[in-house]
Amino acid sequence: MTIPKQIQIIHTCNACTPGAKELIHVDCANHIYPDGSHGIHEMCFRVLEKEIVALCGPNGSGKSTLIEHLNGLLRPSSGNVTVMGKKLDLSLSDIWRDVGVVFQSSDDQLFAPTVLDDVMFGPMNMGFNIEQAREEALSALKAVGAEKLSDKIPGYLSGGQKRLVCIAGVLAMKPGVIAMDEPTSDLDPLHAQMVEDIILNLKNNHGISIVIATHDLDMAARISDRVCIVKDGSIIAEGKPKSIFYDKNLLEMSGLRQPNVVRIYEGIRKDPGVIMDNCPLTIDELIKNISRMMRES
Ligand SMILES: Nc1ncnc2c1ncn2[C@@H]1O[C@H](COP(=O)(O)OP(=O)(O)O)[C@@H](O)[C@H]1O
Ligand SMILES: [Mg+2]
Image (cartoon, rainbow, N blue to C red):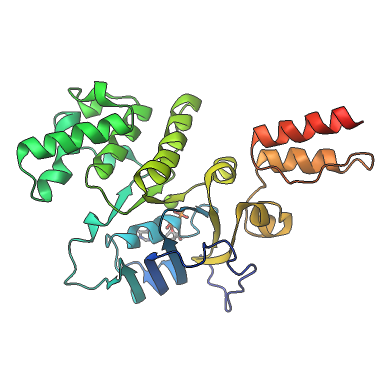
């Protein structure tokens, strides 16, 4: 990774809800791995209550390293991470109660003999008795639509089923923030849609803030409240999905490509006879635009 001499923030964040409580604050954090590689560089990042924040950036830009700092799996080499108002230092070992992480590789997370045992592990670790832990685990499995998998052996599940169980395992601990690393990568369209619906449900019905690191810019456009563009270990731009995803130059210089909906919309809009005005982010919004344009022509 080349570390830029000076980070230029392209958009200042106008996407944060004014007055919203700050749950996580990463303040100028650097992480240098033992082999000298820079994972993140002067990283500044916030998570506010009840929001979906997307971290979008090319491979190696520092998304996973940032995510692992949010619940203390990694500690910054310099700079600070504050979670729920508490500065993360060596004595703070139970931050995983507040922030759950769903790893990119489900196999890194699943280890118990059955799905239920796996999802019960978190609540048990938090001091719940077996009955309470079972209740929490079953309710988390239900929330992700995986209650029928409770007796299965995790290793034999499909990739999509494993992802649901991993989300349940984190949800069972009732954290305020869940960070998911590439939550839809390697999933078939049905499971990717399920995960997307779960993310929205966790925010809307459980009041949980979600951080997603993703290459799937179409998904980020559909569901995120705020988008952060990660490049060379830093956030170089952040804003509402419309202002970020309609900025072609920004995405190109960040090694990303505009979401498909945006590319189609801009392609159609190039035609001088076409009047479309509201910059859609979802297929439904794009269809409404095209239908209106066809009615009016
Ligand atoms: N365990 C590690 N040891 C050494 N370097 C690492 C390690 N993990 C990640 N890196 C380096 O840190 C940088 C950021 O990686 P990562 O956070 O995995 O990016 P992303 O998730 O955006 O693909 C990359 O240059 C990568 O090679
Ligand atoms: Mg990664």
